[in-house]
Structures are given as C-alpha cells and as structure tokens.
Image (cartoon, rainbow, N blue to C red; front, side, top):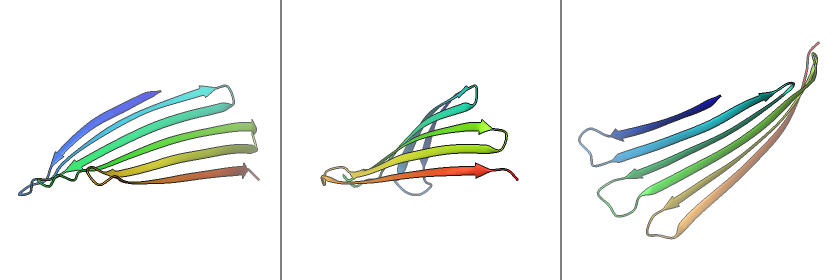
Length: 101
C-alpha cells in the first residue's frame, strides 16, 4: 500500500502557520510485512525562528508460523529551529516476540 498526505493549517487570530507532509509504503511479502513512513512538519509564526520536525519509521514483522510473530521497529525523530543551529535527534528501536496460546 502507498499512502500520503499534505496538511496546511493557519490558527485563528494568530500568525502561526503549520504544514505537514506524510508518505508511507507498506509491502506484504508472504509471511513478512515491511512498512516505511516519513512525516515532516514545519511550523512558523511572525518570528524568524521556525520549527521543523522530521520522523522516519521502519518496521518489519515476520510470521514464523500461526503461533509465533517476530517484529522489529525503528524510528528516528529530528527537530531543528531555523536560525539557531540547534538540532536534536532521538532514535528508538524495539523488538517484539508474539506468541498465541
């Protein structure tokens, strides 16, 4: 599956404008599923500093049999404030093992 979107928002009675783009791709290959997503946000106001956020997600799951599921997920979140040189990154990974009784 292919998914995506674009949002534009201007808050009432303020100069805050926010845009968001989302893209994603999901593939099912027999007993394995692969999913990748990207989300980018930019928020700006009447000040020169605008905030930008980017999120990247990747997940893989594999059904070994009808009772055992293994999945691995990873994400990278980046934030930056324009004009300041300040950036922050956060990496998260998880691994899951699912069993049916």
